[in-house]
Image (cartoon, rainbow over all chains, first blue to last red; front, side):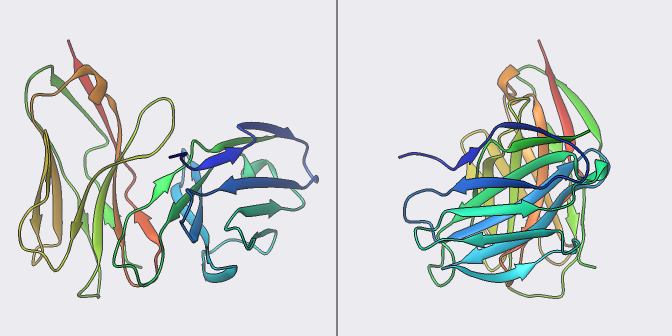
Length: 115
Length: 113
């Protein structure tokens, strides 16, 4: 079956612009999480959605937001981009709550460069 | 803060030999899950092995096994018969009740021919 699909793979934006990243989870997975990966800070949790509800949010400013659609696809948005937002953004999907199955499948990420 | 610590930023091993990557973590929860993920240069995070904290038996997946010491909050990964394709960044991660993964900083493993 198809894996986690993230689009686009690469993105270059200018400071002050906004950007939207997309993630399509594995079919049947209802939980989608987002992580930011940078050389300095490593992997940091952004937020997690399950059945269109945000259940947990990391310690990021309000410029970072997300949503999940009824088909479990998710988008994250970053407004007023800063140079420090340059990072690899990873999406992960899992079956989610109540299934007793843990573990996440990651996509290949979106490499965002802010200039 | 509940942290995950990987004390070895880089390691190298000869092909066919065995290597152990270390990981310690902090948590106040009794039920949680531990993972090792591999990230090759292609950058996709690949699940290597998982361990449920309530299980005393150490998880194994082919050449990969863990040494889980719950009281010591230690979760090391052993790779046997190392292969060139094992060269990657390895991340230890913990998941608690909030479905959030907390990652260590990673260990860059290089397998030499």
